Length: 298
Ligand SMILES: CC(C)(COP(=O)(O)OP(=O)(O)OC[C@H]1O[C@@H](n2cnc3c(N)ncnc32)[C@H](O)[C@@H]1OP(=O)(O)O)[C@@H](O)C(=O)NCCC(=O)NCCS
Image (cartoon, rainbow, N blue to C red):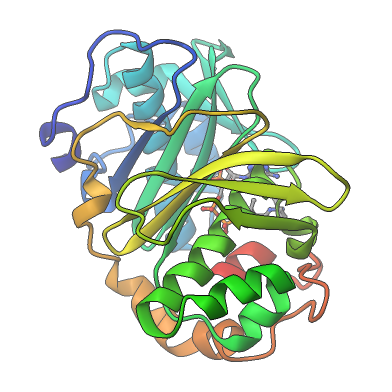
C-alpha cells in the first residue's frame, strides 16, 4: 500500500471536530485484499457486475474510512478500517458508521480516473466534494449544462488550458453543490450558479459561491491539483479544507489509462462533442437506463 507507507499523515491524534479535512488515494494505494470492508460492504461489492464500479467502490470506501480514521486519530491500517462502514442513503449520499453507530463526522466522496477523494467535516454539516480532470469540454457541453453567466466566465478564460480549467471547475463545483443539496443530477445543473470569487490560478484554495435559483447560496472552495481540479461546498461558511496527508498524492497522480481510453473514444463523442441529453434544461433525467451522472461525467 504505497499511500499509507508514503507521505506522513498531518496528525496521529484526533483533529478538531470542526475542521474540514480531505484525503486522496489512488488505485495503487489499495490493499491487496478487501480487509477494510465490512461483511455488508463485501456483499454489496459481490453484487456489482462491472469491474470498474467494483474498483471505484473499493477505493472510495478505503479512502473514506482512512480519512475518517486519520481525522479521529484512530488506527488507519487497512484491517482496522473495517470498524467503519460507509452505507448509502436512499438518495445515494454516503452514511458513515463507526462500530455500528453513526460516525461523529460528516463526509462526502468523489472519484475520477483512478483517484478517490473524501471530505470530512463536523457531524450534521451538509458537505459536497467533487473531483474532475482538467480536460477539453465541448461548446455543446458548456452551452447545455452551464448558465449564461458561467458560460461567459468560460469564454473569458480564453482557449486551451484556461478554458478547460474554467469549464471543469464550474462543472465540478455544481456537482459538489448538488451533493450538498442531496439531489445529485436529478436537479438541473442550471439551477445552481457558480461564482468564482478569485482568479484562475488555483495553486492554493480559492473561494467560490454557489447561488441557488430559489434563493440562498452555498459556500465553497476549489484548487488545482496536478491533472485534476478539486471543489468542495457546504451548507454554511467553511474554511479552506486541510489535507490529511501532505503532500496530497493527487498532485502527482497520473490519470488512469483505462479511463483515458474510454473517454478518448466513446464518451467524448457522446458527451463532450455530441448533443448532451436533457438539452436546454441542464437536467439529466435518471430514466435512460444508465447512471446519468456517470454518463455525463465520464
Ligand atoms: C451525486 C452524483 C452527481 C455524483 O456522481 P458522479 O459525479 O458520477 O460521481 P462522484 O464520484 O463524483 O461521486 C459519487 C459519490 O457521490 C455520493 N452521492 C451519490 N448520490 C448522492 C447524493 N444524492 N447526495 C450526496 N452525495 C451523493 C456517493 O458517495 C457516491 O459514491 P458511492 O456511490 O460509492 O457511495 C450522481 O451520483 C447523481 O446525480 N446521483 C443522483 C441520481 C442517481 O443516479 N441516483 C442513483 C443512486 S440512488
